[in-house]
Image (cartoon, rainbow, N blue to C red; front, side, top):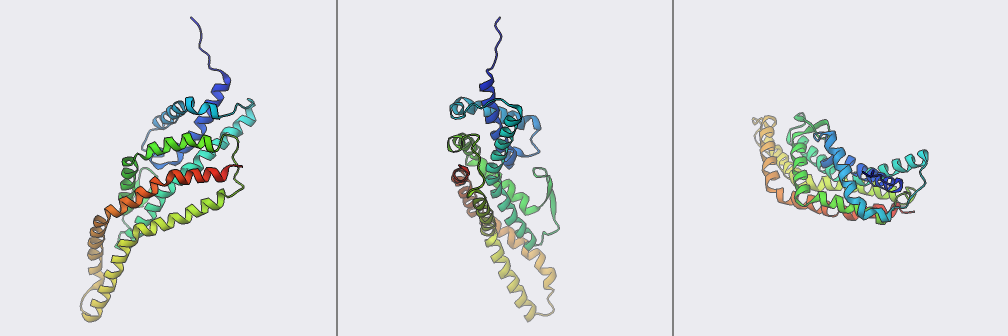
Length: 260
């Protein structure tokens, strides 16, 4: 019975692919959730790298196997994958930011719950909108976008050519600024209605001094906010879908800026 050996060069290429894919998975909230067991996350990274290996092996140069240099090479690929995954994570962060502002304005400032995905406290509205964003991400095949982008990334930026000294950092700051813009667009309808509600209650307080506006504002703001959130779900879905659809272009733009 003949033994089966994997050539060292091909095993190196597989480790390089696995490093970038692992960085991707560790940064994307849907895949990196702590609700998923570690075995599933590791298995997902290993299987994804195996799927990409026959396609991407020809685009990856063979490097000399030296323990220190190869380890630094792998670390650079993990950091690159994490950086690209961070771009998709910004969308979820923007949605959480906008929903947190809504929750504070509607009277849920102290109503926080533990989010098992991020392992931190989130407002009730943020938790709802985060789950809603994950459903949109899966409905538009966002995980397919991840696989396509992971494959295309090797054509735009082969391993070993990671250069962060160009326009990559300014572009990352631009995306961070866009994150706040998304959060504002996401929360704008509810904030506008709550502003009108507060203005109306202020006028009523001047007309009817006996009216306890403070106690009336809590149930009124909560009820109005829930109604506006329900009426604007289609708008929120369109906004989230647009951001996820444009995710590939943003990642490719980042890759072009990282190219030396």
